[in-house]
Amino acid sequence: MAGRIQDRVAVVTGGCSGIGLATVRRFVAEGAKVVIGDIDDARGGTLVEELGGADVATYVHVDVTSQEQVDALFRTAADTYGSVDIAFNNAGISPPEDDSILDTDLDAWRRVQEVNLTSVYLCCKAALPYMLEQGRGSIINTASFVAVMGAATSQISYSASKGGVLSMTRELGVQFARQGVRVNALCPGPVNTPLLQELFAADAERAARRLVHVPMGRFGEPEEMAAAVLFLASDDSSFMTATTFLVDGGISGAYVTPL
Ligand SMILES: NC(=O)c1ccc[n+]([C@@H]2O[C@H](COP(=O)([O-])OP(=O)(O)OC[C@H]3O[C@@H](n4cnc5c(N)ncnc54)[C@H](O)[C@@H]3O)[C@@H](O)[C@H]2O)c1
Image 1: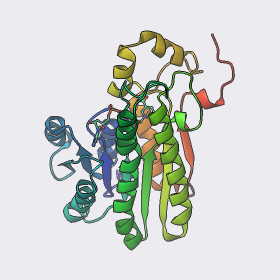
Image 2 (image 1 turned 90 degrees about the horizontal axis):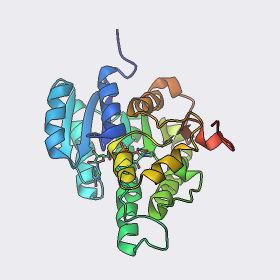
Image 3 (image 1 turned 45 degrees about the vertical axis):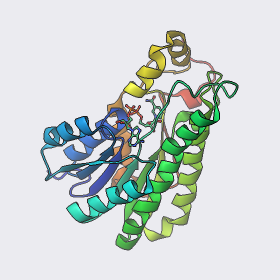
Image 4 (image 1 turned 135 degrees about the horizontal axis):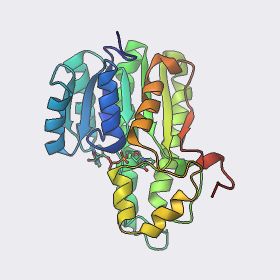
């Protein structure tokens, strides 16, 4: 039986871990050819074999803050598999030195803006010409629930970067809606990935504090995000663009959560 994105060509940044990795696996299971862009070359190499080899997946070393490398990533997808149908612009970081505005220095601020926000600008800028030429495409940018809510346990640059991703996504979705290109933002709640585990390993109280606010009482799993990304990537979401797609266990709807 044909998959839900059979023979579509997808580019996934940050595809070697967490949400990106789960999405790569789901995309391949649903019939897509996937080009993975990441800086984790050791994982990238083994991953392609796991997925079934070069017929279905290609790994490209990409630092998403480099315009040259991002352009080469999307060119590889077009040259290798013939089109760029789906772009999941997902790579991001959440380093511990990004904290309260009172303690976060300018270098830490800038690094997070580059990796989380400038990267999405670069990826959209690189993907759009292919999609406009084809008259078809689906871009999904990873924002976060923190783009729509404030937290007292602050990561100031991270939150600001995700707000930027959300605004940029909305604007691109509106601008290109009549040319067949949809652009949507995935806003995950806290998800059980290395990014979150690293952040909370140093501070268990911080983890517990965040969990209290999740009505479902647990963190999300990467596979639950992959299912949402697949929906946004596929024709099942054909009337959706410029949306804030919250997949957050109910956080953004909650005032008081169950005990
Ligand atoms: N985990 C969560 O709770 C959560 C919640 C909301 C949003 N998000 C967002 O989801 C996205 C994925 O997060 P995750 O939890 O899967 O993280 P993760 O740390 O598990 O994976 C991130 C991947 O991005 C790659 N990466 C990092 N810097 C890069 C760079 N400069 N160039 C290319 N690749 C780079 C890493 O090597 C890694 O493979 C991020 O944008 C993150 O901000 C995560």
